[in-house]
Image (cartoon, rainbow, N blue to C red; front, side):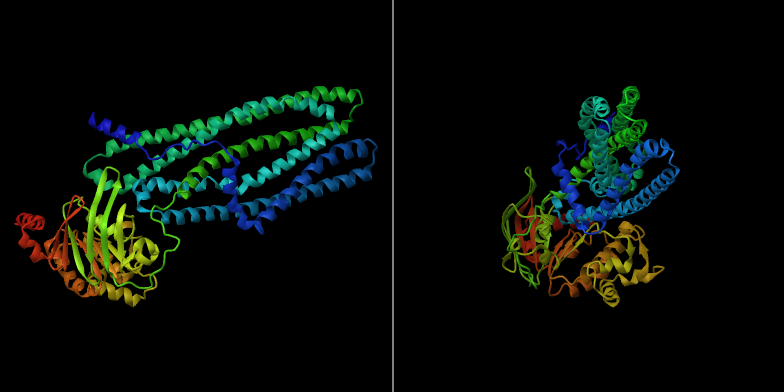
Length: 601
């Protein structure tokens, strides 16, 4: 029973929701701005082929009906008939060639636009603050960048140009129909208001259905990402059955949302076909009457029949294009929701770039909370001098990692100020700060690629020799040289072929290669065995010299040699001093060390 309740709660929870906004062309206009860079190249070429194709199609029925039937055949003029046959064949050939190039250029244009949108979205997401990622799963972000952008592909490869072509064709057909026979055209047009009323009533429902599809896909993708990342935990606790039950539920919801959306879409085409059938009946009945009264000729009637078929064709396609617009709107709203997100950590207009820093860090009455009911730091003031190695200690949740995050300006303090070299970090360009800081985390991330590329990630322009020197200095060269291809050995995402200690050594080499002025080690040695830790202690003593270093660790061997130790408790700075000074006070730090000593015994 508890399992079912847990599954239900997971199933109901989602950070995704339907964005309920009215369809508006202003939003679509914003999307179409991505066509502007191609207004001097692919776009006019596509427009030219559309105009040419439309003009040719409008000419052909006149030549077939009026000129061929009413002139050449009726007058038995074989020379004129032969000439008209050649002209009509030539027009069809021109239409074919124009269509080939229209499809080619539109596909190329559409792919370029999709490329630009995805690049813009990915670039923007990378600029957002950590709080944005705290509130969303990786899967839901992936859906926006991949699925939602992909759903715009058909709109840009065919929808926009087809919309123009159909509007031009429809306008041309209407003009010609009224020119050929105003009475017959007016009789057929009587059924249009009925179709317009019914189709309009479907719009909001169809649009909301496609939004619901996007939400369900996002939930499905998020769960797949979570399941793959956590497969070891799932198998360790034998929760495969429960996980399958959860997946079955969201997969079923996804299927149902697609069914509802496609069923509503399917209503439009039969509606057009019924209207077409009614128009054909009116044409046959009233057209026959007009022929019998010599109001129109047989050639005009035949041309009229051609044009009537051409009249319903764009109306039917306009319905499909409108459905594409609805799908595009549902996706574009979700894309623009991300693009409209502003980084909570933003640069001031007058922010300046620091060419170099010494590494002095000062917190002055800093308070910070991740949420209103979750204070992380309370009125913390501390000073770290350039070149010092300091340690932050305290129980879990005391605020140690928060201090490291604020130094790198991944978050901004709610109150107080943080200064580097005496300058408020909000007055310094963000990249100028982060480019001089290296962070090594307990759960290090290894990217897909070679060992060499992973270490070089800290300094992309570093030479192979520099990479190897960093690995040797940190003690990673020993295990790298034992790998099949040494530094060229390929590792998969998260480096699962490497041990935890080996991955951590790579992260040390990566950070040290960047040659930072400020080095932050956030529980960086927690996953390293004692032998490996001893191997890097000597390298750390030499390499940390001259850098401002902040270590967050529980191991006494890691922090006892720090120049200063800051003791935090529930977001408050409780004690500070070196190891000997704090042990003499017999305070919180003394208790932590004693407890660790007892545990190790």
